Image 1: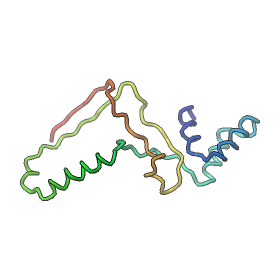
Image 2: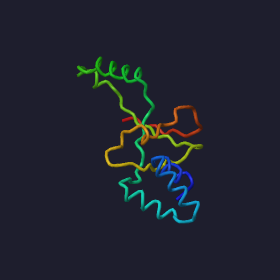
Image 3: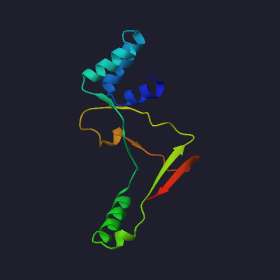
Image 4: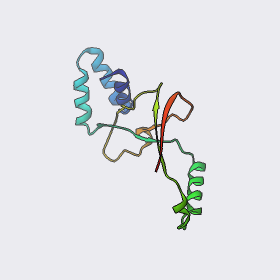
Length: 129
């Protein structure tokens, strides 16, 4: 397990369990495999985090207003062009991050990986259909 993955798994554990794991590791009583097995036994599982933009209440209100204004559109949607784009980031991680969480905790803020919103070098491939 890489250092980054170990760190994200370690951040999901309670302070008490974290202290216990550090003590056991320092004394040489526990391997990384044993720690992983104990986390699984306590009900945590390694999952990919939910990806989402960090939305404020203002963003949510503006999105809701936009949808409400266009709710009854019928003919107008026939004039809309749908597109798809894919972006390849050249400087950031590849997204292979895991978080340790219990069943049903997918939407908790600690289990959501907020996307980078600033400018970063990359390549965009665009398509219209």
